[in-house]
Length: 333
Figure 1: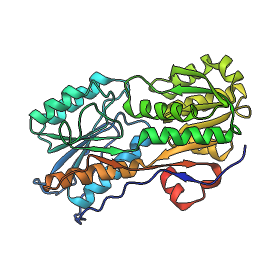
Figure 2: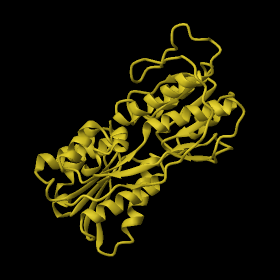
Figure 3: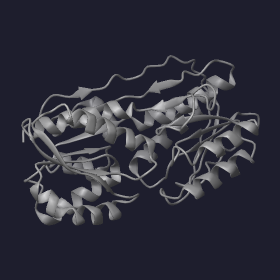
Figure 4: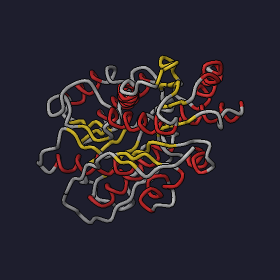
């Protein structure tokens, strides 16, 4: 299948003051980051709570958040529950952090509805909340400070156009969703299907199957879809572990040369699959920028400045030919 030039959604740019402060944060994934030795006790405390810690995506978010904290003199506390499917666990993490005296909470909600009450409780306790990566039901500026992340519906449309191009303009498609309640992936899937509907030669064979929170569960679901995958001309997965699971299943069954395959996010196995021609395209976000801007905007709020209701961190469609572009290499490292 042929490769085409890089496509990009607009990247949101935000000019913010830079404060040079020597500070560092550490800690193992899933644990709170400890302040640097000798750091001042009066630094603002910003907690960053991702959906999970195991995926490469979240490790990049952490890198960006802690870099911004180092620069701005902010103590960044990184913490999440172990299981990315554990809504109750994320709620408990939020409640613990709010009770620990943080100044701002940056939260990637596992569920757009289940985290509404904990966020309202945090605000009632005097802790403002910035939402990143995945939306929360409510109004920016009223129910939470604002949203930082990808325009996920637009990203889904980019993925659909890439898949249609790889299929030569027509064909039958299987969609493997992520999980119910995840606003970011639901928006991607919605955008993807809306864009496909604009192409008369494309038919969706499957659109109601879910990968679950791990690559293992995604592989199991992909294998259950084999009869439909053998009929299909293209497949789309809306998130990192779903794409990994599908890759493993198609590789095992020898179907990678039979299907156009577009996935989402970048991790070493996915980049390797892209470079090898097993995956035709990945829609890649900028998670490090997402983490960085979340902390910057939290500090901006603490300094008394307004926070935009929406900050788009952008995304790009990446094919194998794009991997040697330094801009792309920085996103997929």
